[in-house]
Image (cartoon, rainbow, N blue to C red; front, top):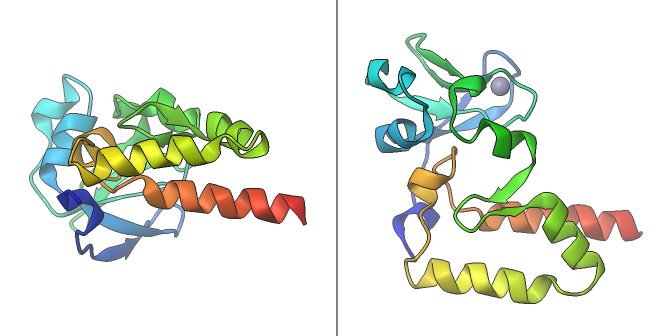
Length: 146
Ligand SMILES: [Zn+2]
């Protein structure tokens, strides 16, 4: 497994929406924020707010914030991206779950992740492995069936 899957993150509440947010590395920020805003990021300890409708992308305890609109992945976030490394969105995976095709998609992602061919730290705005997103969606799918 690459680092993205085993990193220990600290958490902080988003002061805009109140959700629990995980810390991210500066290299994640530099790859996520668009130009020219990426050239004026203040080095700090940032947290990523994954709430889709929250305006804040990254924030620090000292008041530095970066809005979601500044992210290169802004459109992907709006489209419910699931896996940023391999371009899989929630809609695709949900329809795969319904058609019993989901296993092979997930197996592909797990295999790539295990061989270190994922790039979550720079591709995913959260800097986190996307496998948790798959599990969340499977849970939503299961609950929709009951
Ligand atoms: Zn938020």
